[in-house]
Length: 207
Image (tube, rainbow, N blue to C red; front, side, top):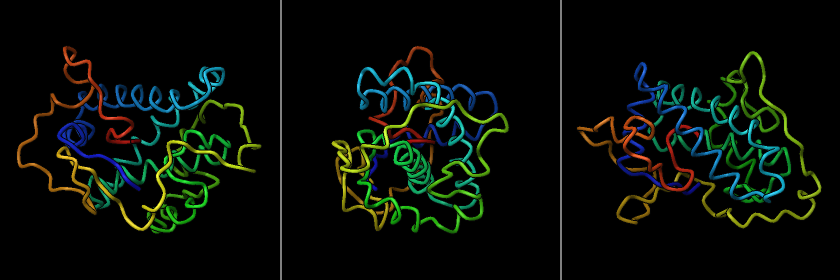
């Protein structure tokens, strides 16, 4: 998959693994991701999907931290959560929201199969053990779209590795090196004076 990576992603990584601050960043990233992906849906479908996406992205923040703790680099940990989201979109037939083509779903699962299997994650059950005990909000599916999938926001051909577009616009495999010093107040949600989010859906967590 092709994602972005800049200082805000590194700051978000740091914030999400901290007490108190992590809660603010978690909530802000959920808001950002829900907003980005709802913008890709038909306007008449947006509100019926909002609660589901809020719950889903909130759960993937735990996946992100677990992947970091398992030793995955930041870009791969974030890509894992993007894969989860796209499995969910695929299952619901929300092809217009997908970031990679429907025919690459299995390839993205296979790359992280070890981690996914360890945590009970499958294409059919994208959250696995990260699903909240109380479940998540439901939302209507559009399965008919899977018959002839149209996904204008999907980028194909990046299923073999994580491709990262840096702040300079360079595309590198695997992501960049974490800066030695990262100011946590650059993370979304930490500084109330900073209303900006992260680029597109590429926040840490569910990006």
